[in-house]
Image (cartoon, rainbow, N blue to C red; front, side, top):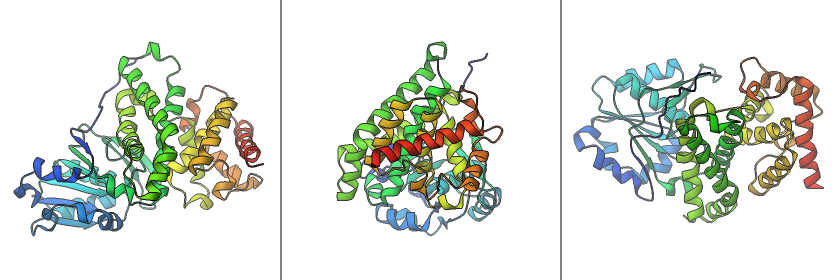
Length: 365
């Protein structure tokens, strides 16, 4: 078996502190920023506007509000609207905006600056984008040959964002550890970079399990506490670093497959990606017979405000049709759940779902 992997640890430059966006003018002179393409979500722009440089309003800059998907049609349209004489692409927003901006920058052959306005994923850090069709269904992800040039995290913007986004980032990043250990059961036989990725995932897990409650309280109070800053960096930087170090040995397993299964149910549409992944971690623990871990994590999820049951996501475990759709999509051929080292069938997954519900019900009793 070949252990050859490609290591791409980080963006070229990462700044995360109050005032980080000021670095933009140190990396790009005025004439470059005057020929920038700004791609942003409207709500993201409203949140970030006070922190952006005056060059945002430069007459020669192209400013594009974006509310679509990272789809071929949307990317082609944005590249056309940008024109052929741009110098840098600056994405301002969440994962969908940043993924799209990353592709547009590569299409135009110019650098990418990412300014995340939420900490729901590690999208600002990672040199990859998730592609969708025009209906919003995920198709595949594309890994780029080059890193993002500059990532600027202004924690005051993220502090003002809705709590649901930070919760989603906590859930998605915790999965880095719980899925990576499934993919790398014998790390001593793998390259050192994979082991470094596992150590990064473990460090992020410890930060999130130990500091998330305090970080969420700080967010409620509008305080830039060290706990809050650590959790934001764990999500964006450490979360992105894990896959960059370990590649296929530190990516996705059952938790993300359960997320994909949940997307088949309209009742879960309002729940964010990382929130569904957090529930998927519990299901993975049940599948692997890790009942002590399941109970501990279910209790932690309750403290944080993450879902501990299907009922918390408006799905009835006794609704045979809905649960059947969930299981069928989760077990779809090619899904990452099949990387879990146990035999799988519908009955086994159903039992895992029921085990998760039972732990949640026991904790609530």
